[in-house]
Image 1 (cartoon, rainbow, N blue to C red):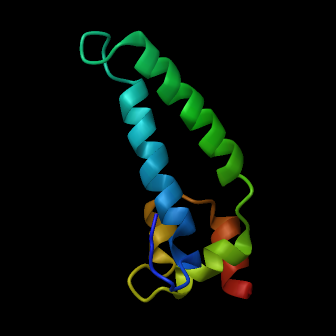
Image 2: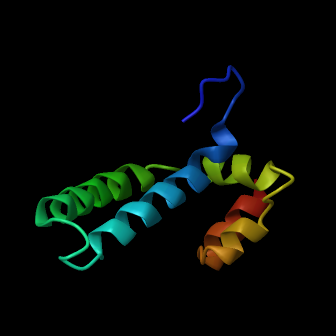
Length: 91
């Protein structure tokens, strides 16, 4: 997503969320707004993204939480489980 040479580990979870939201919006559009093939592709993309998203771990959450613009509030706002947020605090 970036061509810079800086570390972007803190962006992994937020970028996954942005992309997943976008493909879900596309998959949920009515038939007249998009073709059926686009909806099928969006659903397949969502399934693939969710599979890789599930491989993120507490380290990725910690990287995001250390970003001064997001902190742990990001996870509360996005509806993450309280147990996951507490575990990230303990790291």
